[in-house]
Length: 157
Image 1 (tube, rainbow, N blue to C red):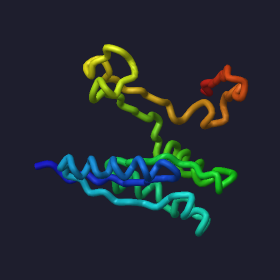
Image 2: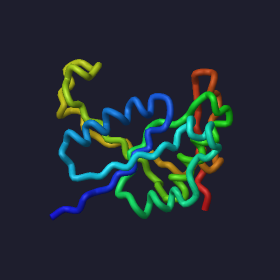
Image 3: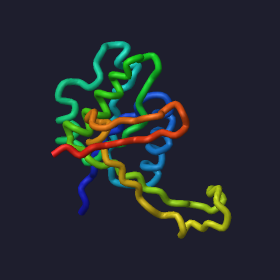
């Protein structure tokens, strides 16, 4: 007998809630034995009460949930973008989320802009490192506005 999995849902800002809502619908439609708990850690909340993540929020996520369904963060009304930084970097460093896995799978060839590409041809995972380079102010980005952006990262031992 499998154990019910608990998923924290943090929709975020901007397009985040728009993307997370259908993802939640897919989870429900799948019949998966999961319990979803929604958290409003958005710019709207930050602007209302000045709180990005409640005290012990990251510890609670790590302790009480099997996964986090996380939307996009960032809102131009928060000029410093501090709420997005505190949430995203907080998750990465306080919870040691060192990698972001992004599966890519073509579901139907009509959805692909490439000619003669079949669903079997597109099935991979992008692994994005989350705790080095720009996230720790090591390295940086050059020529950002000139169309020839260069990113650098340095490993610190």
